[in-house]
Image (cartoon, rainbow over all chains, first blue to last red):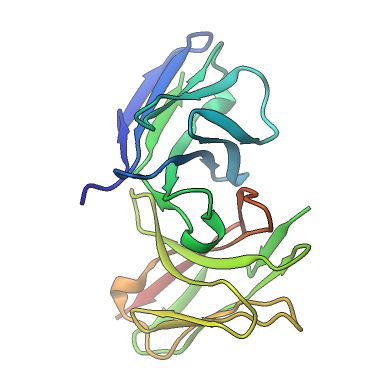
Length: 115
Length: 112
């Protein structure tokens, strides 16, 4: 079966612009989480959506937002981009609310570069 | 809050050497524990998991045992290969659908 699909794979944006990243989870998975990966901070949790509702939120500024659609696809948006937003953004999906048992399946990520 | 501490890298080993990557955690209740691996240019892949104390997760020759008394989940492999070169992340999910929390990652390089 298809894995977690993230688009685009690479993105270059200018400081001050906004960007939208997309994630299609594994078919049947209802939980989608987003992580930011940087060399300095490692993997940091952004937010999780379950059945179109935000269930958990990490410690990121309000410029970072997300949503989930009825087909479980998710988007995250970053407004007013800063140089420090350059990172690999990873999406992960899980079967349902039992994430502790099933764990997460990750996509290949979107590499965002802000110049 | 929940947290994971894993040994700093990088770790460089010769092919067929024994591998241990230490991981300890802090969490309330009974977390589930995971090891993920990230190959260059890719996302994270689940390597193994354990959901309760004394469980042993295993996959592709890698093993880790959930030790509640020492709050540890060390990753081991008896004989590493060049293809095992990657970054390894220890992670946990706490009670009640809390987010997956990662350690900083340990880069492993295996030389022939």
